[in-house]
Amino acid sequence: MLRFCMHYGIHFILPIIIGLVFFKEHRLKIILILLAGIILDLDHLWADPIFDPNRCSINFHPLHKYWAIGGYFLLLFFTKTRIFGIAFLIHILADTVDCYLM
Image (cartoon, rainbow, N blue to C red; front, side, top):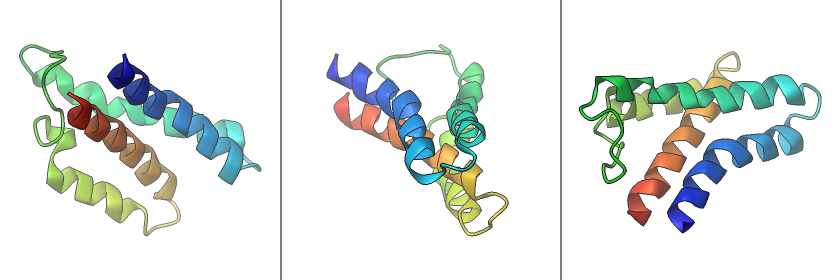
């Protein structure tokens, strides 16, 4: 139960908190972009099985590979892509916590 709450709390509650606390001017737009970071899980469609509760996503799925994570960090350095980098890194954080709690 802890693993479930931590994983989905980071995926869904943390983006809302970040939007409300740090982006007051455009909070709804930012929150929606941060929540959309879940789109990284589209790469699960290429896995067999698509969902395996005992599989660590980090460095397994293409959009969860270490090189991709490095790319998400690079997005932080540019104003126009920063919010997307934050969204993707929140997603990676959720999956990393999930791996550690497995």
